[in-house]
Image (cartoon, rainbow over all chains, first blue to last red; front, side, top):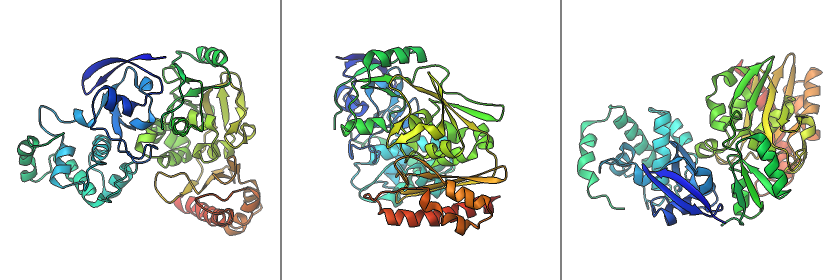
Length: 175
Length: 271
């Protein structure tokens, strides 16, 4: 038996009929076609599936679609505005905050949430703030650097060159 | 894994929740944040035939202080506890625990009512409820925490009963909580909570038996003037750990003694 759901995903309203057991991550990927949200551990440990519900980071593999009925969902596809990368995306680009890149969408969403809560985190606060995300390539050093640099960019304390990269790097980004 | 199929309802009141629970019978489950239940359903360790989602019930997400007690609504999430200034004043040990529950993503969904109803010995707040003589308020009655935790994942809740709030005594004495684990977001291999109440100490143990445990023997030794080390040596009779993938029972017993001393020291030195 299906249930009707309506939610706003990346600013666009959708209505669908779904089985109650459909997980939000499967809904986003398979029904809404937003495959930027990744499935990795499938046991709510790794955070690769992190999205925002009403602005708060959650693991979309541990939420049923019906629970998100009526809410605002933001996925990695919804972070950039008018072709300009979100400062956290840009910082991951600049600092190469990834190795294979599979965990990256989840890390970026978790980091964007962290910086909204705490615009100037210490290194320890960055580590605590991203404790729900795993990088199996162990690329944590550059991820930490990226979050630090995003924090500086968002607080207007960044060095000039990285601010200029925003426009030029936005165009060639794929997926 | 995909969960077994189930029916889903989102009631607007506690009364409606109770009628739905009666309608769907004993295989129905109440869901709040779902951060324990959904992983269990995905492993098919739990296969409820219906989920009653209480997220929309008004009034269950409030925190109130009156007459020496703090009442925390069932839908208050870990993140709400972390950020609540009144709780930081009135029940700081719970705030300390909330910082160590899961990770940001889990804390944004998981609720105190869910932890209590799930009755997991590894659920940090359950040890706090037990050691502080909290009261668990449901649609049907008030349970004393000391009579609430019956066995592994088994509480005194009946199938048509839903936790609506938890009431703790205001506890402003010295306190500390140690959650020993290998990774930040893990459950505790062993957790030790201590709280000074008046002139005596309360001690609670997380994940060291099938239910949360109160450190009664340790408390009695402390009340009798024993040193932290001598009191901690009594912890063996307060717990009943089993061997699992994380550690042997013997290791956990030793760890509990060590952590009890450290946690008492942390509480007394922090003041």
